[in-house]
Length: 361
Image (cartoon, rainbow, N blue to C red; front, top):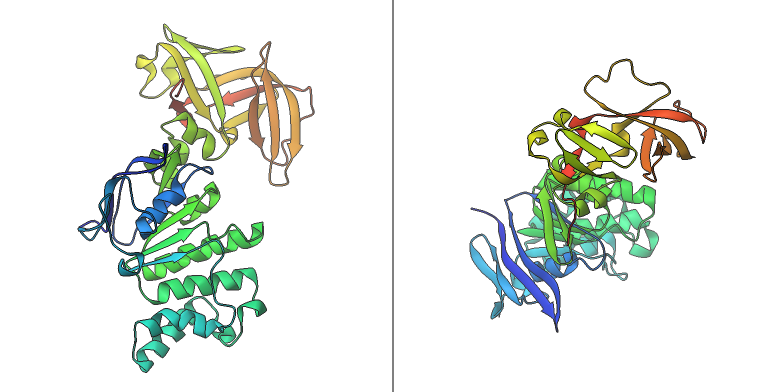
């Protein structure tokens, strides 16, 4: 049986639809992220799962039992869920141990069981040596660990996280997103995680739900989502990409500044006719100084370096194909050094690009 099922879920505030027709099934122990820009409906969806907001349409079920519908909502405290907010919401007048044990005390656990579970979770989140400190004496990352420990120690049916790393600096966010995944692997609690940061979602998630304008654009594992986006929005939101918009006819695709063989595209070559669009990741384009002796199954594009930026781990170049306004971003290794104005050839492997809709509403 599925753990959590959302069916046709919708929420309208006045005349404004915040969430529209969201259907999603989570299995026991799965980690799913709701990812999208501000205002896309991800936090509203999370709050409906938590029971803080009642849906206008659709239902939410857990373990086959109804939790939410337009005419009935089970109270948040009766759902068997834990939620972690952006602000952590830990009590400043309680020590680490008191904060973490609070939920266990509310459940009237026997003293020995309480101490055993408290010691275990503090050890797992590496806070055992700080259990007598107060939140003001902790770093941001340590406070986040307290919030995680307090939510997990009660062994909830579902764990909900609402952009929990947004208040941390970049290095600490990177550390904590790995920590969240480690804790999930240790406890296997079904988890719904809201974020606008695609790196967080990619590192932590089994599946990612990309939302836009209150609707689901695509649900997939991180690798498939990145390499095979189904919509133009997903391709542009998950990482950096170039969009190639052209016209296909009789085995040839005409792009601004160059033409390419359609028969080199796997699977879809014979289906191409009229306007076509592709997503090409910057790291999937290779720079060369000279024209190829053998095309070797690739698209080759002549151009010039228009801009460049050194980012430490790689160079980012902007290349303009000959006689075109098209600008293609290319990522290259640190030792691959070109000057602005240099003539170059781009090698694009058709097997490493994704077709996306030519236009979207």
